[in-house]
Image (cartoon, rainbow, N blue to C red; front, side, top):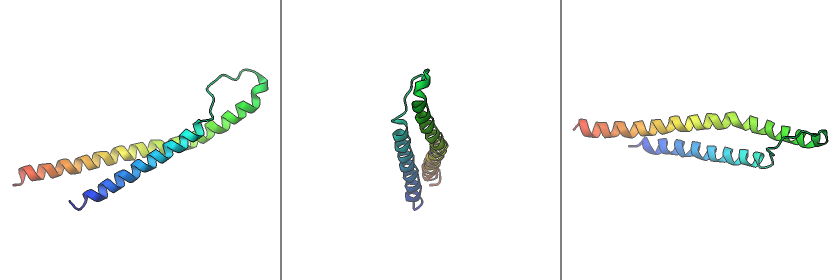
Length: 92
């Protein structure tokens, strides 16, 4: 069972990274307006929104990668414990 603390440490580190990235993305999205900008006098608002969307688009791939890595690590941790149970039950 020496390998279990390493598995949990990696899983927890990925989880913390995902939380941090979500907080950063939330701060970027905080100023985003979900409205139609139809009038030409709103060009400066449209440009501000474009900058915010560009920032969010930079963070989104990192979020996806972290979610997949956390999911894979969850499968690895669960598989480790299932194999441990199997060895304890059938290798008496």
